[in-house]
Amino acid sequence: MISTKGFKAYDIRGVVPSDVNEELAYALGRSLAFYLKAKTLVIGHDIRLSGPSLRDAAVRGMRDMGTHVIDLGQCGTEMIYFAVAHLKADGGMMITASHNPAEYNGMKLVRSESRPISGDTGLKDLAAMVTDPDFETKYPKAARQGSYEQVDIVPSYVDHLLSYIDTKEIAPLNIVANPGNGGAGPIVKELAKHLPCHFTYLNDTPDGHFPNGVPNPLLVENRDATSDAVRREGADLGIAWDGDFDRCFFFDENGRFIEGYYLVASYFLKKHPGAKILFDPRLIWNTEDIIAREGGYPVRCKSGHAFIKECMRREHVLYGGEMSAHHYFADFSYCDSGMIPWLLVISLMSTSGLSLAEMVDARIREYPCSGEINRKVGNADAIMESLSTRFKSGIQDRMDGLSVVYDEWRFNLRKSNTEPVVRLNVETRGDRELLEQKTRELLDLIQGEKA
Image (cartoon, helix red, strand yellow):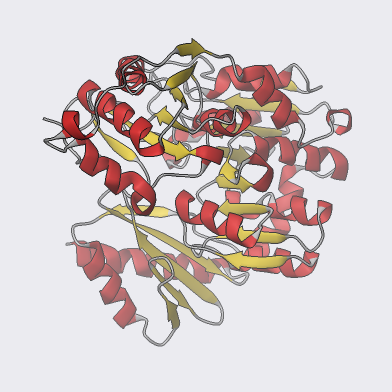
């Protein structure tokens, strides 16, 4: 039996083989081809050990519908986004479970132009299709099997990434690069061939056994290796990636972890004055201030890649950023990339002559933030309502979870779409003591409600 337990708001993600297995992959491949009336589909997988067998099953399903399949092999999620748009395919499937534990896998789906297929734009329909008892009758195989080819998209993809910077302006920076045994290593090394920088690599061999744990630098315990290496090497910065490398994370020359919240937006406004910049409601004051100072136009949007990509297209936004380290670019089919941001950061460091710490210290002092803090809970909705009542004197909005604003501090609390957790973000106007006080207060209240 095929389970739909793994179908989430934005993608499919679950334990192998109970939630995600070859039967699901085959049925999904067939259903996606039928649903999109696809002549050509792109497919790839991350470094998880179950990836190749799930890929093979999905390919069989696609080909059984007469669809031509382009297989990128092991790749990053953003390489699927790039290939679907670049090759003008009708859609694509990336087999990945992002930062979930090793026993998980899943699928991210896009249609033409790499537009996301999420719960509101087709994923629920596909869930109904794969579990339809009349599947074989309603979605019959084609008379002739579709063709199949393996394509090396890396050269075209790397050329596109390099188009965002002028390599002749890049200084010979000393960079620590930590892919965490995920898939980023080979791509970083391809980019390094075109840069005058010295790279020190950590955990750069892709390995689905996750010998150093699942690569997720948002977890505090996963940051020490990069921080220590930056200090040991006297590096100018450190960069770490998650497993499917659609997110990258920065460490300054002191080994300090830098929240993605403080980076990138100013780069685009300096290059494109008056441009629209999108951000999510979790943390906003720093971004709003940068946009106001640089003469840009702010666009606030609910977090989540499907919402952000749709909003960026509708509003013609140049760049969008989530504080969770997803960065979206109009010239990248409005998709998120974990490679473009670090290229922009080293370009900005090179042309400004500033260190990463010098670039962000003033912003951190003006708008210190807690960073996203996750807590496992039983009833997220009850916690949300309790805090809404507790802080009813503040200005509240529900664009994304619960945001409460006071003159000198604000917080956002939202529940995860994929895990039984709530995510807390707190920021203040230049008052670190107040930040620590309010963060402790909120966490104590969450813990009390959880108990």
